[in-house]
Length: 454
Ligand code: MG
Ligand code: MG
Image 1 (tube, helix red, strand yellow):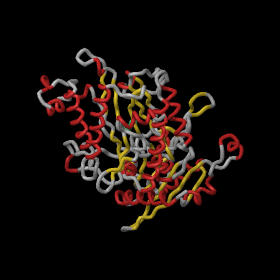
Image 2 (cartoon, rainbow, N blue to C red):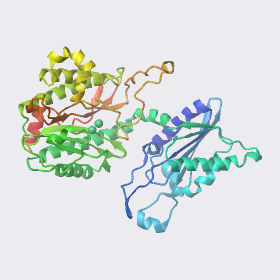
Image 3 (cartoon, helix red, strand yellow):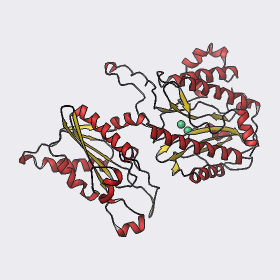
Image 4 (tube, helix red, strand yellow):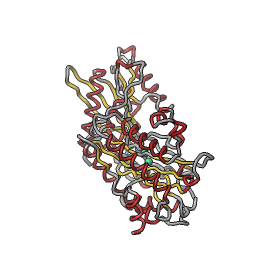
């Protein structure tokens, strides 16, 4: 394990806290284990912020950072509280790292048993002004904070001062996580490559009569067979009318000839998500109306990708996609120019929303809808809406326009139940962006050829 990355991240966070408060204590716990039903738990997934700072994947752990210093000198000592070694439990649940070897393994200054957390925090919070913690995380975290504060306050008569400032730690970490380093981009690249292969596998095994869950099984096969630990989110495999349900999950619908299948699926590899959508004809051949709307969606994606570059704002790719989609809807007479007057009016009035109701992008990283503010922090604009975030190298976003045509009296029947989304993952570099998920074909002809060559 490369400990250095995590040490550097902790140091960078410590510097931010030092700059804001001149020191303090930062506390961040990993995710709890969750019961699924009797004696059975959901597969464990660490907390992303905690993992970002430690690289430690076990449950029951808390990171406490002690930040001190004077002048410009910031000093950091990190404490990891983790599950103690327990031969009896380890027979059942597997090996625990344990506090004895954690400092060497993880490159952290101190490690303690998690049973020491309450006692030790009573000490660490002594004479500290500022606490950096997740605010209003949950009732248990609030209860623990009260407990620690009570312990320190009880010593007031011996001249010990309890902390007087409470700060949100998430905003600081999330701003860091928004910019991916080389190690992160490499992992995301590998995750996207696995997901692309999974999409090809599902496309090639699709045929009329197969059910959605069977294609989901093909995706999962490729994810796990390639070493991905999990899905990054529940896979969407949607046939026919289901493709117009945005958060549909793979169900038991039979896929029929003449219909489309929309798959939105991505694996999680080493803590990082991928997020790809492809839409393809169940029988391997797009119909005329399907192909027409597919090409509009692809042109919208191309327009958005061209705007996904440093210096542009987060919303510019969306605006570019929206223009192409709306023009396409007018061209195909799904929106009536005679009624709307112009493309600009169709956009301004939101007439397109009936067929395109989501945004084109979101941040992507450890979480599929990754953290980081979508707005610039502009202190002078307190009352007005803050401007959209300016894209910079190291950010990763998805580009995912779509069109969803539900049956309606004023809609040509040829377009009914056509739901299309095309989604790729874009790493913003110094001059433009790189699509890391293009291991799976995207052009209509290429998709047909891929399915034919199954
Ligand atoms: Mg998606
Ligand atoms: Mg997405």
